[in-house]
Image 1 (tube, rainbow, N blue to C red):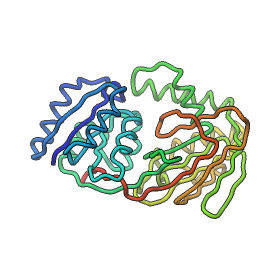
Image 2: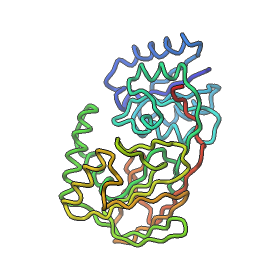
Image 3: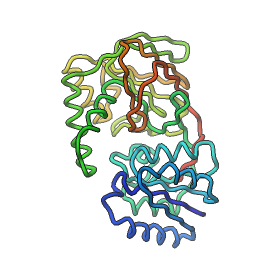
Image 4: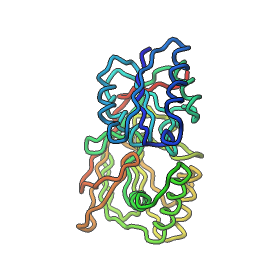
Length: 297
């Protein structure tokens, strides 16, 4: 097959390695399996343009390496197209890659791609914007906003910043009045956090979907308010014990509509790790098997 790789040299773990040396290893691994590879290593500001070129190229597989934003942009560029996306696990948590069974070592991932198979998986959208992992408001958005104001230069530094931001958010959690339509049901509630995910998260591990082609949105509504409840919530999330927590309501649907009712101040949301303005009304939809991905055989 013909591969093209778009590597964000400013994103994820790629900024900490010898990218020229790794590019040579990529070419050797795929070449030994009879594949061809072109590589574009670009700055973060140029990733979207490089992905558009890759999507329009003659390549059959687009490899993307970088953080969550790069992977999400690549998936959006390839959504509904015949090309396959191959995800290098170069981010902090690599949650979408984990759900696809991709090895977490860069070289092991390339070996898997050399002998892999193409599989169609789902994507979700929020007001037409595609995402591969999750949309969230409330505590997660507050935490990400706080973390972006911190300085860190490595994957471990980012994890440490996330922990500090999470504890700071626990001390002063947000409270949002929302209306949520899920299929034929309507819900009015006050919440500290809502996450809407591309398929339901699995149990017993980090938050990612075990079944990336399950055809549903996962809808997680947090009603925890007291600090004790919130601490337990964070511990359950870290251990993948979603269903053990009595303060998380879990729903699934092919469509949902979220309306923000509280306050006139501007709120933020997080979509695949990116902090964005929150619309007063957001419509969600699952898009079944619209993205081809290259996974281990």
